[in-house]
Image 1 (cartoon, rainbow, N blue to C red):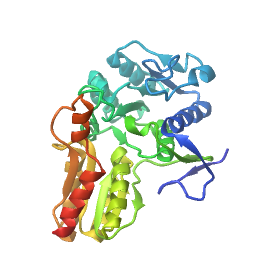
Image 2: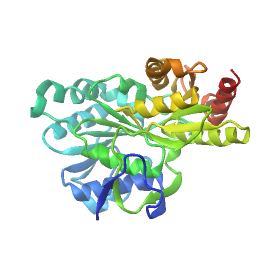
Image 3: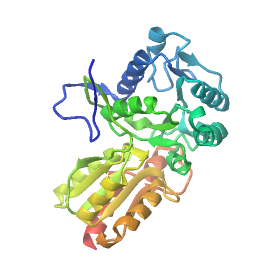
Image 4: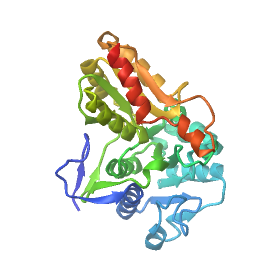
Length: 340
C-alpha cells in the first residue's frame, strides 16, 4: 500500500471509515509491526487482556508473545528493559497503564533514555515510545487521572505527542515509532471512545506540525489532546454570539510548532491557552512566554490560560467535573478578552 506524509492534517478528500480512537491506535501499531520486525510491544496486561483500555486487543493473536509481551508490575523494569532493547536496535512501544505510573520510571526515562544519544553520539540511539493514558473525567482519583506532559517538555532529548483525533492519533503514532528518539505519546482517556473518520490509506503525520482546526479573526484558542476538542466546542458556541475564534491544535508539544501559533496570534491579537494539566508551570506557561517573546506588540489583551486548578484531582465525580477544564471555561475567557 502506498504511503503518504500529511504535514497539515489528513486531506478531507481521502477515503475514510469511522473508527474509534482505540481502533486507530491499534491499526497504527499493527501496520508498524508488519512493516518492521524490530517493533514490539511490552507492558502490563497488553497481551491476553488486550491492554487496560483495549488498545492492543487482538495483537497477541497475530504477532505472538515474543512481540506482544506481558510484563511484571514494575514500571522501572519495563522502561529500563525497553531502553536497553532500543539501544540494541529494537523499537519497543511501552504501554504505561496510567500516565501517573511513569513516576516509577523517571530515572530510566529522564536520566537514561533522554541522554544516551547526546552522550554517545552515533553509538547509541533510543527509538522508544511510551504510550501514556492520561487525564481525568472517569473518577479514577488523584493518582490515576493526571496530565503530566509539562514535566517532559522540560527534559531535552524527549519528544512529546498529544493527538486529539483518531486520524491524528494513527498518523502521529506511526511517526513516533519510526523516530530515533524517545517519545512520550499522550492518549487522553476520554478520547478513547470517540469515533470519527480515519483515512483508509497508509499515512504518516510528521511530528512538529500544528493544525489550524478552525479559522477566526477575534481570538486564538491554542490547545491539544482533549482540550482541542473542547476548544472546537467553545469556538462553535462563541460563533453563535458573534465572536470569531481560531482554533490551533498543537498535536505535538516537543517539537513545538510555535510559528503556526504566533502567526495566528498576530492575526487575532488575543489568545487563550487551554490544557488539562495544572496551571502552575504548565504547558500554557511556556507557550504564553514564547508568544510574548515573539508577538508582544501584536497582543490587544492579556494572554489567558485555562487549566486545572493547582489541586489533586478529586475522586468524587461531582467534584472532578467542577475542576476539570472545559469548553465553558474557554467561552468565559474569550468573552472577557473580546470585551477588553
